[in-house]
Amino acid sequence: MTAPDQPGRHDTAEDRRIRRSWVIFGGSFLALGMLAALQAIMFPTPFSWATLALLGVVGIAAIRHRVAVQSLETDRRVEAESFARILQGLSRSVSPDAIIEAIVEELGAGTGADHIVVVRRRPDSRVLEATLVNARTGGPTSTTLFPISDLEDPPAMAEADRREPVAIPIEVRTPVLATPAGPATPAAATPPAVVDASRTAGRPRSADDAELIANRIATRARRVYGLKHTLAAPLTAGSGVIGAIVVSRRTADPWPASAQRILGGAAAEASAALSRAYSHRQAEARAATDALTGLPNRRYFDEYCSLLSRRRRAEDAIGILMVDIDRFKRLNDTHGHAVGDEVLRSVAGAIAGAVREDDVPARYGGEEFAVVLRNPSRGEAVEVGERIRDAVASLDLRRIGVASTSVSVGVAVADEPGRPIPEVIERADNALYEAKRQGRDRVIAA
Image 1 (cartoon, one colour):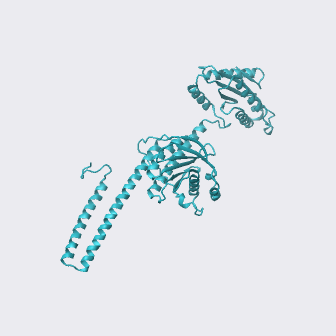
Image 2: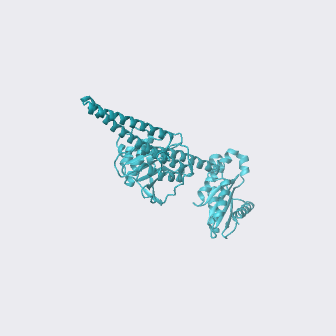
Image 3: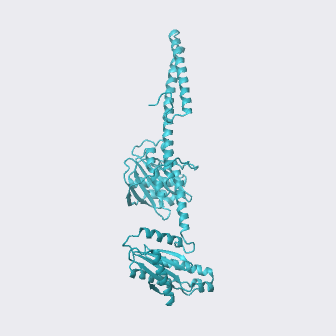
């Protein structure tokens, strides 16, 4: 127990000054009350009794004010600690999924919500993904797809609200929460507006687009998950609104201001963290993509092969196709580099369309391409090579003044355990040169 003259863990110099001021006020008020009571007893007049009654009212009001101030200070302190823990969790989160998981647990405790729904657009697809978390039990999460129109078409909100929702459960997983590690500095951004969707669903659609989108997403969440009494805040990125955080509880009491501030602050910080994560992911994607063809580049190909080598199981087969555009130098010299670039783009598209879903095509360098095949037989690898050769031969390049083009393909498959991938690449490369020597426009297997 903390001694009276020892400051508590949260005690500050300002707290001690406030406490001393109340002691002085209380002592002075008590002395004044005693004098007023003595006067009323010794000289009973209506004025003296009125003065004593007024002092009693002032005393009760002062006590109520003190209790209210202490309650407000406690709430603000709890709110600040909750927000600090949210920031600490975000400081350790580098992926979008980790960012969402980092705020869920503390957001539930800070707002008193029973359920939390985080809805966000995936940066690499037109998918609006909603994740429901039970803040009370901490059970497994439920992930559902919402219509992308909820995010992209604010003027059509009223019509969307009238339609029945379409929800497709796609997974159930248990969140792994990030461990706080050190203080974080709040972002300078102003927290977005918080929308009590259960109370504003019927009002005119004249608010800001971000508020409208958050309101619509909350409406969808209530319908899909059967939630009541929701509060929502939009998630934003550089390109605009990318989703919303929706909290829900069973009781119909108005949401306290502290819950609105915590949700708004959490949404602002999560938005900033998601923007950083998406920007980092886009930068990595640009670094691993060939700017001309849009295929993965040589760096990505080498890193992928290295990762594949480490994770490859003994029974896994690996196939490599080396693809080279025939007589590309002559084409460049005859038609110019602009036409040559267009041919490269067309051939890259033909290769990407001819390979299997799990195969990885890449621009290996110059006019040469490479394809990694997962678990192919020798016959399947040759078949993919033939599909590529046929797809390129079928290209219509007359619009750029080129009659046709062709490719030579070298194939190598390692179905025995332990064979290094660089050796498979070398064998495919040798097979490619053999295809060139035999007259080009053909597939040769090592």
